[in-house]
Structures are given as structure tokens and as C-alpha cells.
Length: 380
Ligand SMILES: [Mg+2]
Image (cartoon, rainbow, N blue to C red):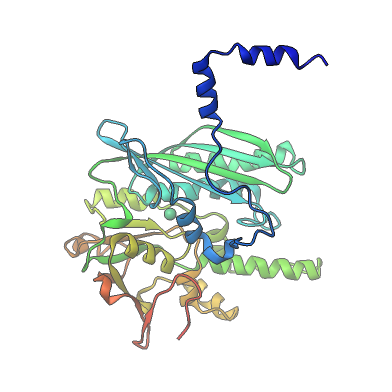
């Protein structure tokens, strides 16, 4: 009774121009109503995969500002905000039960890793990280002390990579911990490296070693299952420290970014190895419209990775190609730059770029030529 008359009168007194703009602002959004489970044209997420999904969702994205030099499609977005430097921005979200398991990942490690994986994407642009923001969603399962432990890891990564934590949001979650980090970096305009600059005859380089983080994850999963079956069993982790550290506390290769600058080496294309070497090579080749040849016997695989993979009936080459989470840098250089890098102890030359028509192939140890695929890579 008391709510109708004044509202109707107020609406009648609105000026005509206001009425028009109100109507414009209430235009329905394009596209179908929210899909339901029994919608006839429902597409399962699994039908597209992560990259197919990103392509599909971003089809309608338009850029409105000339300052946006590069939007979606590289390790970080690139903004030209004036001055001699470009700004790069990247973000990554980690979910409990999807990206980490708190039954074996200590909270400080989760905090550290959430920062490091973003710094790794800044490194992949050949940029220097400067600031981060951190968003977390937590349930009341977590105590203040637990969240302090998470932040101890975040602060440790900030100290290591010299980045400032400048903001974020904290909210509640009904299902586990979510941590999302956004990192901002800067790079001189002539030093930025995209995925798209690789050319035929460039040398494919990768830092560090590959496959260890994946094998480390398999070990912790195995020991968790043993523990769940029999809580009296002690985990068998002797001699596996390196693999576990690679999984729980990956390092972003900012050291390599600084060394490349000191050696005056400008990569032609670069990205970090988060999903697996094979997937990243495919990305660089697609972005650069080239193909590649890589050699199985050149892939850097640590001895512990090699022997542990064997113990677990895993193929070390498959772990290196498709394991992921190595957070090493994959980059290409002109042949003329090889002399400057050939003695670097932590850079490995694993192949070369060729014309797109020659495809993307792995030359196996027994000299077979196998096409490289991102997932489900068939063994020979
Ligand atoms: Mg990346």
C-alpha cells in the first residue's frame, strides 16, 4: 500500500531525455539466455579444451584503446602508457583441489607458487616485474594463522623477485582456497619479446630441465594414496627432494632474463613452460607462422627425473614434453647469437625453427620423425 503511488509519480516527472537514456541502458544483452543442462545445443567444455575455450570466449573481444599494444594471446598483455617503457600485465588463478592439494602442499609454498607462476609470465615477455595484486577466497576451514602462512610464502616471493604487493581482494569461499595473482612489469620498447617473432633457422633454446615438476607431482600423489590406504605408512620421499621442490616451489627464471640482457642476447620469440614443452612449441609456431624440429636427445632431463620416471613406468621424454609446470623459459635466437650463449650452463639448444610447411616434429633417439602434438602425444 505504501510503496506504489510516489514511485509512479516520480517516473512520470522524469524528463524525456532521461527516459531515453534509461531505455538505452536497459537494452538486453545479446546472445541466448543462460544455458541449462538440457539445452539441445549445449557444448561440453571438454569438447573445446582450454585453448579452444579461450578462442571461443574471446572471439567477440574488441580493443578500444591504441595504448593496448597486445591483448589476449601472449604470456602477458602489453600496454603502451607513454614513456620509453611498455607495461605488461598477466594474471593466473590457482584453485585448491585443481592446482594444488593441501594434503601435501604447505600453505607458504602455495603462496610462493601463486606469485612465481605470474612472475614467470612477466619473464616470458623479457620484462622486469614490479607490482602484484593478490585476491583470495577462503572458507572458515582456514584460521588466521593458516592465512598468515600463505602470506609468508607470498612475501617471500615478493622479496625474491623484488615486487611490491599493492592490493587485492579477500572474500569467502564455500569450497576450498582460491588464490589469484595479477602481476605488472615493465620492459624497454626495443626489448619486448612476443611469441610471434620466431623465423626459420632460429635456434630453439630452453633453460633448466624439464619434466621434474610432473614426476614430483606423481610421487606425491602416489604417497598420498599409500597414506590414505594405511595412515601408519611413512611417505617414501628420500632422494626425491629436487622433484618435490620443482612441483611445490617452482622458480621463475628472472635470472635468465637478466643474463640475456648482460650478454646482449635478444630472443626473437619467448614463452614460459607452464603447460608442457610440446604445447609451448606449438604456441610459438602458431603465433610465428613457422614449424620446428626438436631433438629428443637434446631435451634437458635431470638424472633424478629420468630414474624416477623409470621407476614409475613413465616415459621421461613424455614427462619432459607434456608434463608441464616447469616454469622454464623456451625461446628462439638468431644463429648469429649462438656464440654468446653457447657456454651458458643453463641454456640448452634443443632444435631449430623451420618453414611452416615442414611441420613441427620431434626427431627421436632412433632417428624417427614424429609430429609433435600438445596432448595425447603418441609414443613411438
Ligand atoms: Mg605463460
